[in-house]
Image (cartoon, rainbow, N blue to C red; front, side, top):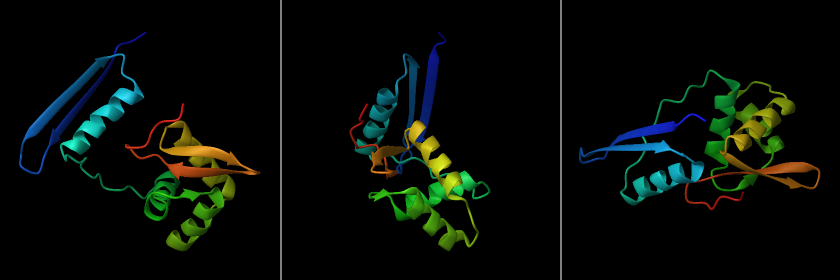
Length: 129
């Protein structure tokens, strides 16, 4: 097994620099603890420019813009996507990307009747494993 290594370089609003390194058994929970610590110190990530070239980034933009806290379905995303970008997209494409977001830990996915219900995972939320 290869040794994992993550390095986070940050600078706060006052110009103080922080360099954090995690090596060895790096888990999602440990990385989330680092982000919680950053939140306590009032350090925020630099916002990267949003690349709207891909369908996936457009779908994530819709999720982030219209459903930052509440629950949603793939049909909700489809409607907002077509309103926002004025272009058609297949429901199966939306469902595929939402499934990938779930696998990557960006959204929580729960079966509700015949469909999936999603909710974005924020750093402060408890993880259900």
